[in-house]
Image (cartoon, rainbow, N blue to C red; front, side, top):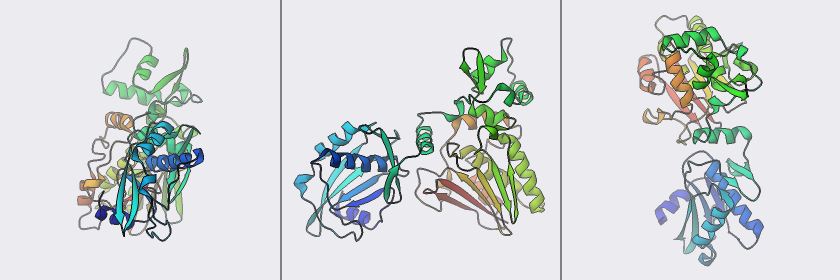
Length: 374
C-alpha cells in the first residue's frame, strides 16, 4: 500500500466495500466485537476487496491521523481469526499522508462466505454505508454462489410426486436412452429430481419442480415471469420450459414484426432463467415491453463486477445454477440453453442496424438487466 493507492481509496465514497473511521479501540470486548462485525459485514458483501480506513473522518474524509502503536497487525488478525467462522483474511498497512499516519485494513475477497461472528452467531452485510443483519435469502444465496449448497437438490417436503409431470419425465428419459428394470423412483433420485424425505416416501426436489413441475409456483412462488406491456400485465407460471415457450409466443404476438431477431430475445431470456438467483424469494423475472425497448430483468447480479454498464468480456457470467444448466441443455429439445452465457456477443450482433443492446449489472439491487432495442 503506497500513498497513490491511499489517495485512490480516499477518492471513493463509503459503500459496501469501503468504510472510514476516525479511530480503532480494542481495549474492551465490545470494541473487539465491533471490529469483527465491521469486517464480516464487508467480507459478506458483494464485490472484490474491501477496506476500512482508520484516521479518516467519515463525513468529510478529513485526515485525522492515528497512533501507529495502536495498530498491531498480528493483534488485529488474531482477534478476527478467533472470532469469525470461517476466518476472514485481512492485512494491515500504515501509510503517511499529510504528515499523519493512516491505517488501512484490507479485507480480501472471500470464496468462503458467509462469515459468521462466533460470539453472537450473527451474520452481517453492508447496505450502502451501514452494517446490517444478513437476511435468510442472502445467506442462502452466498452459500450457493460459493458452492456450499446446491439449492436444486433440496427436497420440497410439502410437495408430492403427483406434482411432477411424469409424461414429460418419461419423454426425457427416452430421449437420452435411459431405462431401468428397477423402481422409477430410484432413477428419479439418481438424477436429483426427487429425494427421500422418509424411509419409503419421496418428494420432488426444487430442481425437479423447476424442470418438470405441473405448477411449481405452489411451492416456489418466486419462480414466475411477469410481462408488462403498457397497461397490460400478465404473470406466466409453470416449469421453466413451459414458461419460456409461453413468453416467446406472447412476445411474438406483441412485436408483430417478422424481421425482429426473436432468437436473440430467446437467448437473453434463457440467460435470465439459467442465471437468476432462485434464492431471492421476493420476485421473479420481469419483462418490460415499451415502444422502444424490451427489458429483461432477473434477480441475481454478477457478483464479481461492481460496474453498472458491462463490456462483452464482463458479460460472461459464472454458472450460478450449474446443476440446473446441465439438465436444461439436455431436456430442452430446441437446445436454447446450450448457448446460454456465451451468446452475449451474438445478441448484440443480432440487433446491429436496429439499436444498441445494453447489459446492466445492478449489484445493490441484486439484479441483472438486458435492454434490447425495438
